Length: 276
Image 1 (cartoon, rainbow, N blue to C red):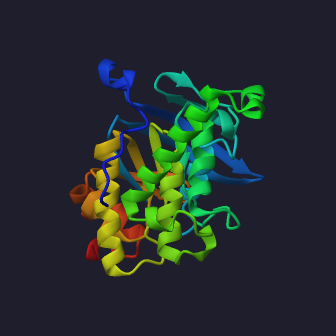
Image 2: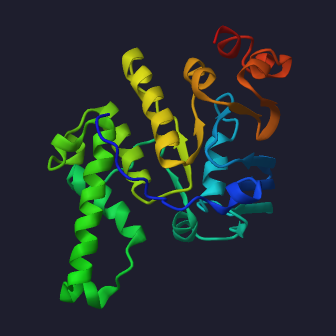
């Protein structure tokens, strides 16, 4: 974590000026056949917030992320990003609007280099069309150089810049998870969704990850919502936590409130949350 790259989002989001939440989700839900996977999920995520989404296995957490990113289309409800209605939008439109995510199962391009994984994500913000790309115009070349520099700067957050030209699948598991976060940041998001970023990491790696997540939030002024099973990490870094059980929100509040909520303790069988 040696660099201090310029934030992709230079402008202050208008939600900060209006006092409205950056991401407003109201009563979204989805059913698969007769199974109500998520029911009445609501969330107000302010600009620069760092929130957690927790719950037992099968509670519907990743389904919520799939709804927020357009992988699934909600049966009901409303979703606004910076007052822009995204309900019914395709994943590419939602990504362009400013919501990026990582996945529970790593989804890098293994045959490409570490750098090219990040550069491809940066192309989402490209302003040049096919003709300029084919002709390699000076403006296109300048933009490509800027995307390449930004990719190196972002890789430096996790000290991966020296491995930029190595294949992505040559990285160890923990570094591949870091690369996924870097790739998501390269899209210039307003909201970053992290799906179990600490999975498979040891204690020291989790400490470093917690520091990196805080740094990313502060440096890029991005709002973060993370799914995580490591309750120690969640309680340490999240300002507010939403708890799902069987697709329904059973509690929401500060870490202290969540730790002492009988419904949450019951959902976890009196285990992980209390211990954390």
